[in-house]
Amino acid sequence: MGFEEMWSALLPVGRDPDGGGYHRFAWTPPELECRAWFLDEARRRDLDVERDRNGNLFAWWRPDGAAGRAVLTGSHLDSVPGGGAFDGPLGVVSALAAIDLMRERGVRVDRPVGVAVFAEEEGARFGVACLGSRLLTGAIDPSRARALRDGDGRTFADVLAAHDLDPDAIGRDDDLLGRVGCFVELHVEQGRALDEPVGAASAIVPHGRWRFDFTGEGNHAGTTRLADRRDPMLPFARMVLAAREAAERHDAVATVGKVDVTPGGVNAIPSSVAAWLDARGPSDDAVRRTVADVHEAARAAAASHGVAVELSEESYTEVVGFDTSLRDRLVAALGGVPVLPTGAGHDAGILSARLPTAMLFVRNPTGVSHAPAEHAETPDCLAGVEALAAVLTDLARG
Ligand code: GLV
Ligand code: MN
Ligand code: MN
Ligand code: MN
Image (cartoon, rainbow, N blue to C red; front, side, top):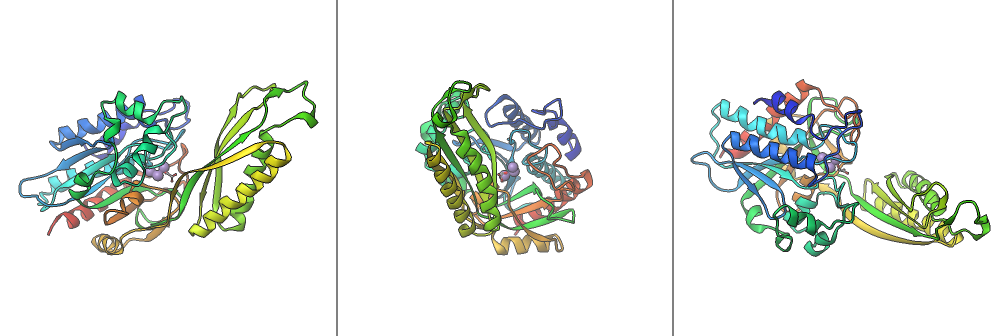
């Protein structure tokens, strides 16, 4: 099956029939269907499939004579709520298509080539982005991961156990990492930064997620005088505006894209509001200052409304500078492509702490991502497959 057939087979899985994008959350039926699709495609190609103890999937091409540390590529199959078709799956489908091209062309590889599907890259279910790659590399404490809960209150440990994974066995896997020499992730570009079909990544900007818990007093919307209210919605509203103002001040970006209001009745003053802040910027300092300013504004507004506020950091990733010699090699193998930084997080960013890592981007003409309008034209996707095949060929030989 070529790129286009694979792409068409995956396209309907988890797609909202009313145009609301994809809902492929880790370990839910649509994502499990995507995983099953991947394993089928891998087996059809006689690749050796493996599920690691952290729930990540791998398919290894190990032709006779290939030995030593593998060249690994791949991405993820989960999505944000209402996500686009390309963020994640493009890297997985392109990886399988690139191996097909190499085989068709009789490329002889000296090293194995692997395709990875990392679990819970978006953190849309358990809150921590890149959970599978963080566990694999030891970037998150396994006991913290086990205790993470989804929106229904189910723990990550519980969900792993339901899928025949031992929650006590999760964590850094030096055996697996020791079998890999380098990682190259292909991904749709997620802004308007790439004018050519294919580019390479220089860096990922610092980024993180923070949770603000506002606790007030639930009460009746009609009978409670304004002076008697402890309404957590008011400091929450102030916090949202403060995020925008602080981001402008520090040349960062800040987003409040998720909020839980308890109990969520039209005619009830909420008892609590939980809100999530995503902040990213050109430097650690810019991000830290943005979050500190938002916290300060939230604290002041909460105090003036008799509300308590607590801040917790759910994840933070410092600036990722991708391996420059690997990137130079990749750019040379492609005869020169644009090199650009990104404001989006990726498993490649997590793996870069342990392995030489690089990324290829495919042009996104809409400039939209994490939304249904995310797009890449088929000729650009095919150029991405060609580029990935050239890079894997270069890295897996000699
Ligand atoms: C993940 O895609 C992120 O950048 O949030
Ligand atoms: Mn994403
Ligand atoms: Mn992604
Ligand atoms: Mn991402």
